[in-house]
Length: 470
Ligand SMILES: [Zn+2]
Image (tube, rainbow, N blue to C red):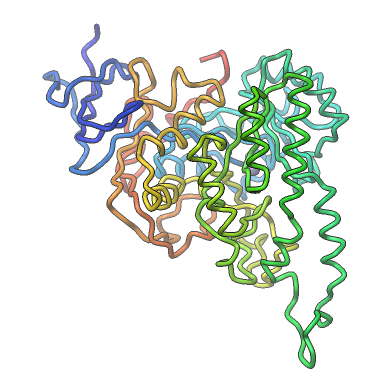
C-alpha cells in the first residue's frame, strides 16, 4: 500500500448515496481510500474544503462541440477544456461535427486526435459520426477508441455532416449492434419542420395579419414564430422512429438534447418495456422558458428549441423519475457575428448555446428550487454521463479505485454571470446577467489541481481517453 500523496477532505463529501464528512486519500492519481474525516496520514498534502463546500465527483460532459480542427475560431481544445475545468468538469466527450474534417472516418479521427494532443486541461474522449455511406468506417473508428457514434435525422447545420435516412440507419444500426456501440441521435425529423416552415413563410414583413397602417416587425425576429418552425412533432416522430428501429435491430440508442415533453410518455413506456434507450436534456431546456425570450434575442437559439414553461416542468418530472437520464451541455459555440444579434434574425442565426462552464450552477440553481438533492445532481451531471460512455470504472463517482477527479464547490455562494468570468472562446451567452447559485472553488484532475477558483494550474494535463486503450 502506497502512502497517499494527497488528502482532500470536507464535511460534505458526495459518495454514491450520501453526503457526509470524509477524507479522500489519493495515490498516484486514484482514490485509494475513503476514510473518516480525521484520518490524514502525516506527510501528505492536505486540501480541506471550506465550511459548507461540497466535495463532488468531477463533472462529465458527453455533449461538447469543440470544433477543432477546422473551426478553431469557433472554440478549440485549449479554450474548451479550460472552460470545462473552471466549471468543475473533468472530462468532456467531443462531438464528431462542426470540426473540419468531421469525424466520420478513421483518418478524420486521427486528424482530431492530432489536433487535441497536448492542448487539453481536462480529459477528452471522442464520438464518431454515422453519415450516409460510412458503415465500413464504423468498426475502424470503434477499434481506434471512439466511445460511440452520433447521427442526425435532419440537416445538421453543416454540409460536411449529412443527416441519415431510415434506409441509412437500417444499414448502420446492425453494424453498431454487432460492435456493441451506442448510437446517439439528434432526434428531429424533417417532415414536420418542412410543413411548419411552409406555413410560416406565407407571412412576409409588412403583411402580417393585423399590421394595418404600420410596417410589421420582421417575423424572423419573433421567438414565437421561430418556435413554431421547430414543432414538438418533429421530435416526437423521430423518437418514435428510433424506438422502433432499436426494437428491430437491438442497437442501443441515446436521444441527445431532448426537448419535447410530448415524447416523454413514449420514452417512459419504451424504457419500461426493455428497449435499450436513454435520453439527455440540457440546462437551457430546464432553465429558460419560451415565454420569457425576447424577440430578436438570438443568443437563445438552439435546435430543438427552448419550449414553453409547461414543457420545461414536464422535463423536470422526467428527469426526476429517470425517463431523462442525464443533463449535459450541448456546448455549441460559434463566432458571435454568426448569432446575428444586430438583425435579431432567428431563422438565419446559428443555432447553439455555449454553457460548458455553467452547467453545474445552472442546474443547481434550478434543482435546489425544486427540492432536489446534491446526490441527484451528481447522478445527472457525473455518474450517468460516465455510464453512458462506458467509463464508469474511472469517472463520474467518488469510489475507491476511480480517478481522483474532484470538484469542490459551494452551493450557497452565488455569482452573476458576466463575460469576464467566461472562459469559452466567445463570451456571448443567454445566461449573461443571471444570478446563479453554486461557485466552483477548485477542480482536480487525477489528483492534481487544474483550477484553483481563479487561475488555471498544471495546464495541459488532460489525457485523450480512448475506449479500451488507457
Ligand atoms: Zn450538439
